[in-house]
Image 1: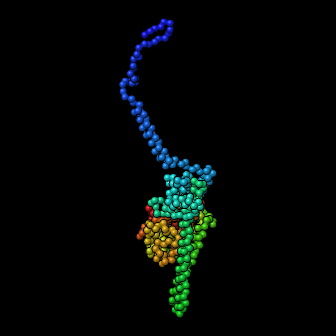
Image 2: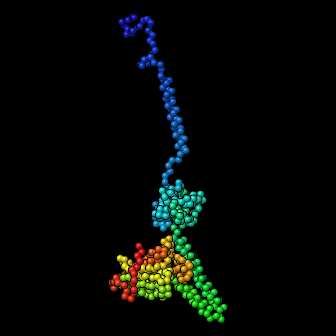
Length: 423
């Protein structure tokens, strides 16, 4: 090495030593850069594949659709409708339903209950027309009873369909009862009219036989009486079915009602040798129409006498249960099967049609009793067992009268035994 003192340069003389290549700080290991690059590429490819699969799945699945909102004005209108109202969206969900729709069982778990209603909604969506139909829908999965409804279905927006339903079950039932009433009246009137016509022809042909004339004339009187009674009861029942049938409401003495009804029934009872007994609590009063109450009690007595065998007894008694006056008629007749006890109050219903023809019954007496009881704010009940007789009880609200009730039998009546319990 030569050093020049007059200069700041340093000159290296001789061969420069060779330095081996650097292998890194970790020592002499093979190069790992290719491995790292491969791992990163593999990871990127996996993430890309997953992202592609997720994108494909998302493209096939619709996002959750918001439930259409019902306009506030429409909601207020639905709230005041008499009809059961339901608003259904495109997915078949009921987004709005009134209390009446739930009461009729038309909506359950946020959807229409009956397939017929769902089919109507789908049809309106397809056609865009308003549908008006009447449907018979089952009341429940375990019930055989049908619900008759009038349904109107219309689209209110592009997403919502309105379903209106009116319960017509009771109205259709009343229409059927009216039709049956007319048919039954025609049938009942035809029988005595036909009998009178036939008897008149027979009398004309037997003009030379005085005995036959008298016999057939008696039959004509019987049929004429039956026809007159039927017409009068039809008129009475029609009047009772009109609102406000009580023309004049007064305080009515129950003693007088019972006495008059018993006197009217006594002739028929004596003809069958049936002992008529009257007893119970006296001095009671009710509010109502005296003539209608007499008719109701007399019908109960006539019914008991007609369906009781000869040489038996019929009891008429009055009792007080709280503020309710109970007028009970007890017979020893044929009795009524439990399955048909409620039907005896239907118009023209007869427990034994053959016996009714023999007794001349019209099938309207107990129906009139029921209407009279309802018009006076009361009711009529029946207890009966086949072979043991029946007890019909007319229950009326007691009215405050001038006299207090006296728990003694009426002095002119004979009471041999207490009235049979209904329990």
